[in-house]
Image (cartoon, rainbow, N blue to C red; front, top):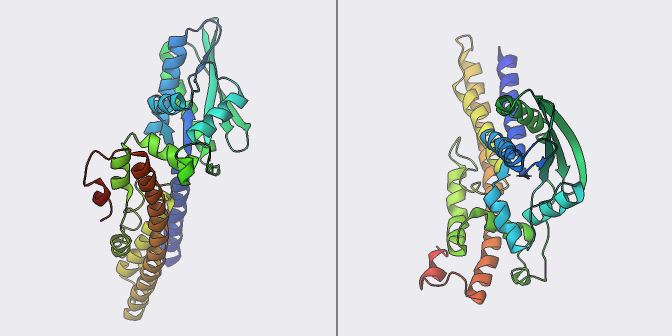
Length: 314
């Protein structure tokens, strides 16, 4: 019984970590190319189905079409006609995405064929492909759901790509703001003032919350690429609590005391490491926010509120 419970807890921890790592993956889904017998409207609708199913999985950070257009417009780059790997890689770099989904939908007789490729932005190559066929337009939504499930399983096994560094030719790059940091801000849809206020965190608050079982990491993980740490410490807290309360009626008094001590040790070690990781992550995030603060104050952005400089300091 004891071995079974321990194995079950380890299984939960492993599954939690794998799912959390996948959530770090930024994926951009481009509109499908319309092949023979297919108009652009159907190709666009099919891409929307793929995007919607991918978002509903809650496994990845999926960029919306509006977000992509806004960022690319800023870089004077268009999504139109981007169907090959090299173009997908370029778009992926501009969007700070890890994976790009490109593909084509064609009609042969009465059968629709959808070919999808996943491109790794860092490696600059197509990683894998999937194909589905549908006997009619009515079958496409169900077929797309099946396709997305297969793609998600393969994508979840991959590691996130390296975050781009500083581009010194840009105004924000002169303040040492990296390309990834800038695109994360742009994709948030917030004004710079709102972004700074929302993302600035307090180390003391984070350290206190790290001591609360099952709450570890959630203070600093909103809009952060470190979500897997929150899941890790939450799983460890759950494991510690499970040991503390376990009682199947067969344990002796000594065994119950040993379980309690084991649970306290697991929870205590988890909390100590969590406090350290929390302070590292919050400090790193706040350093980024301070760069945005300097850029905002120097460039005169979002300074209509006279209390802005104080609003995000405390």
